Amino acid sequence: MGAFNDSGSTLPRVLVIAGSDSSGGAGLEADQKVIAAHGCYAMTATTALTAQNTRGVYGIHEVPVDFLRKQIDAVVEDVGVDVVKSGMLASASTIEAVAQAIHDHKLKTLVVDPVMIATTGAELLPNSASRALREKLLPLATILTPNVSEANTLLLEAGHDQRPVQSVADLEEIALKVQKLGSKWVLVKGGHSPFRRDGTEAKTEDEKEIVVNVLVGPAAEGTKRAAEGEEKLQVVKIEMSYQRSRNTHGTGCSLASAIASNLAKGMGMVSAVKAGIRYVDAAIRTAPGLGKGNGPLNHFHSVKALPFSPGHFLDYLLERPDVAPVWDRYIYHPFVMAMGDGTLPRESFKGYLMQDYVYLIHYARANALASYKAKNIEDVAGSAAIVANCFREMNLHVQYCAGFGISKEQMEKTEEHMACTAYTRYVLDMGQSEDWFALQIALAPCLLGYGAIAAHLHASPTSKTGEHENLYWTWIANYVADDYTTAVQAGRELLERHAVLQSPGRIEELVRVFVHATKMEIGFWEMFPYKDEEMAQ
Image 1 (tube, one colour):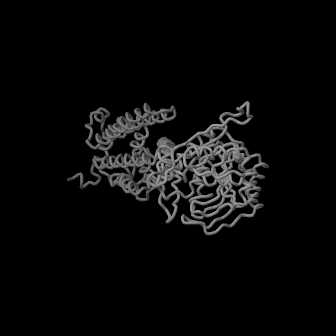
Image 2 (cartoon, rainbow, N blue to C red):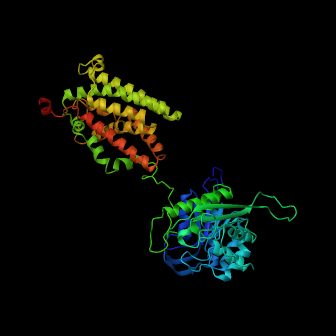
Image 3 (cartoon, helix red, strand yellow):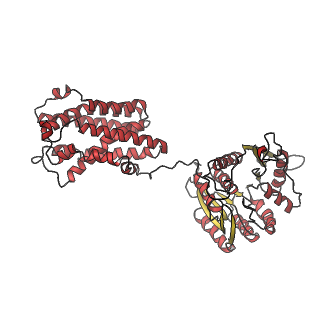
């Protein structure tokens, strides 16, 4: 998958030539879901529109052949194609047009799903078109993926007798015969003919225990049997447990598209087929149970979607209903607002500065630990820069306190308040017991919050501005200064860069860490009275 294709991109491109399924469970709609779930780029050329649901097909409207050809030409000539997957082709003229387009564009990898009969029993390819499929398309096919019924139909059209499937050996013989019809590989799917555990025919529902899929293809490129001049073949049996499920709508389409996606990503044929079968097996097992008939699969069973768009983790985080109220209590806390309008008691601010001095020591320790736990030099340097910023901030605290007649020695001898202890040790515990990113999340409320608080107070019409009008204006100005806003921006970028690497479950765990650390920040404000009458009490 890492190799560049002819467009200069590493994104594998799969063109699906097939019919549409209005219910979304099969056809082009299912194909696109499968291809997207495999991390590939899907393109479509529509052969027919169908009116269908999980209970049946109620109408088919064929797309004119010349328009179908225009669809194929348009995507091949612009985006480019790594693998073609064909599904419902509907008529002999459509098959001939598809074969001609593949030949003209020299498309080398073709996965053919010979869609003849829907799961519900509806005919999707007339008998008159079977010959065109065999003569025109199979010689171009990299792999053909018929079920037992479709395989027997192709063999019958080619003059062979139909063979009932009573054992795995029968399935192998059918696969070997179909492979000789022209495709390089053939996968005969055994989902409609389950067996007992010993590989013999299951005659009752209770006896159905396993499904065997048989893959036949060249054992090695260019290997020949000297006597017969025939290509040496390998037979691979892929066995799965039988699933009693009504949710099998679109299994053939989905399997072929999974194989096409795996081939587009550079997998070998045997590995691509095995992975595709396992994908469909899980899709049936986790199906959502939609519809009243044969329900669709769960095409995205292995895709873990993040609850936010890349680059917007913090927007998502701070707007969550379980985070936003806590964050607002922190940013607009009465202690903070009292600094803005200059009404905060001086003794409270002095006590805050001295406790914050103690806090910054442990905050620097936590960032030093983060630097140690980081896995790349950029993150090591980022945490080290925050440690250096803590040192500068502590010196500002010393200068600030000097104006209140408090010496550095007094600050260093300040007894740590229990709220400060609880907060800082929680952060350090995150660093010891959790991973690097959890520590960053625990540290985030402090870094982000002080920037948000200062920005709000600096712009608020209720704030008293200037050092002469507001004793605390220097504190506010410190956190809107370029050096701090630069640090906040660097912290935001770091969080965004690593958030997209987490799983949805891990995001939920990290949200809880963030909320708890924010509550600890609130507890820090609440160590001190923020009104004169509270001081008097």
